Length: 523
Image 1 (cartoon, rainbow, N blue to C red):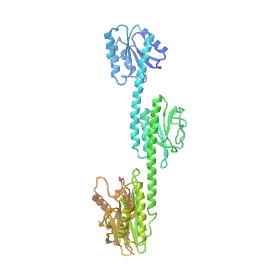
Image 2 (tube, helix red, strand yellow):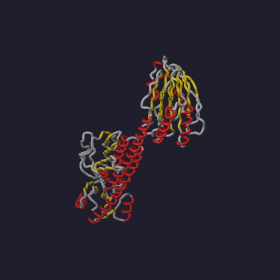
Image 3 (tube, helix red, strand yellow):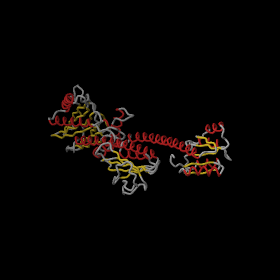
Image 4 (cartoon, rainbow, N blue to C red):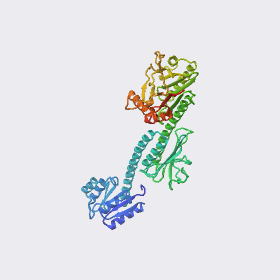
């Protein structure tokens, strides 16, 4: 026997139905009976009455058995159900040919030998179940590939777990739950109670899964905020990790109807999700390291600058982009202040380390009290010798506090903007970027009047898709006119910085540094 099956026997003769159903039931099958073709089709379409095989008489009082078989095979819901024709009258070759041509999978002429019937039933069930298993596995593997593609595009752990839980529900056609942890989010669990249901994210106060992927015990030890079970039924689970020592990823699905093929698919899904989580963790670790380094290289506080107001901002690139090399510097010495803003080309941990090297060199040259042009010239020589593959932009200012006189050297950086009431103009005068073997000692001189402000930014606040560089500068000028054209002494520079970041710094994949210096009205 191929295993118990749900079989529909269709015959208008009660005695024939009794004999056939008796044989089938003694063989362990579950049998439903129908006396007409219409009744048989109705039972087949009733989802509450599953049917794996039909034993169908050719001569029926309402619908010809050939037509019933044809309808069964034409309906996508029942096309895969095997049909065995039986007949005491339609026994000729032409009858058998018509029956097999119009949808039957086997044809038996009466008198029927019980062993032959049971052997035919067993053979067709084996074939049907193998086909169903292959189609089911192919469908699950297709959805596994789709889920793997989706989770590898995730940019955060909560998003990855939501996609993974929804994908697991689709793969296994039912509820699913996943859990994992990261330093940023802590332990998170995501539950999907049905294939089309929305994932529910919750903190995971405990994770008590067995490593055995098919523990099969009731789900009373599953993780959850209050520790309660999610499903009061046996579950199948997998615990996967990409590296030893890492927090594992957990996937749980109900165990009903779960077979060896399903266990293999579940393990593949678990490993795919574990690798995706590991990729996110590695990315986050590199980014945290780079951000820590980058922030440690920025001034921890601003020095007092008598008679001037200074505001700065540094905002790293978006949460899911690499960090960059933007920086600023403020150094106050006797009688003047030196301000610098710069940007190392690229977005990576290396860009942050290059920024640190350049900033340390800058501070060393500033300690020697060199003019801005000479300082940039020395920085350029240093880069050509020790960092020959790198490119850096930098704008360096030396401001005489008593007069507001400024000497500026600009190595390929966006020009500063001088704000005097509603008049906002660019301070031009640039030489090549640092890292290019040309002279860099040229300077531009101008005066910062009382109440006037100087705004220096990195290109992350200017460049945007859909805008040219000059259009970005025009947008920045317009924002400064709107935000700083009031009474100069009444403008809050901190609020100006926040407004610039909010208005111009959105939807950027670049980091941003911002430096605003305002000379007081009196004093």
